[in-house]
Image (cartoon, rainbow, N blue to C red):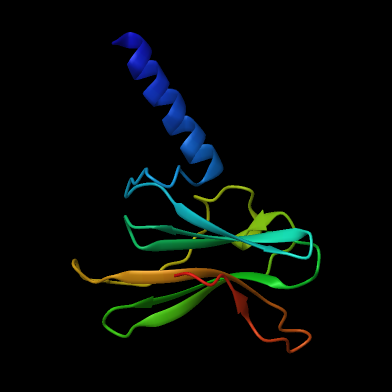
Length: 133
């Protein structure tokens, strides 16, 4: 039993450190993430159901901003933007739990959809997102 508890604890630490768990794992206090690969770099968009928090990671040196585009089953929507630069989460931090953004007051039972995206506002390029919500 002690070995099982230790393995569960180690798995939890790994999930928190990476900001995402395996596809079959779901925990409302942890961020669930999507990765968008683009021209040798990547962007990561994450959502944490507890508190309806979003965060975006920029893993590409191209000058574009990482974003999470979100919307709800009741018609609310928004964008969480990270324009802090390469290899950072929103606000220039290296910690997914620090400085996330989120919509206020989403009621219980409302479905939240979201996509990882990038957007180069300085060039006026269109937003590019993963294909699945």
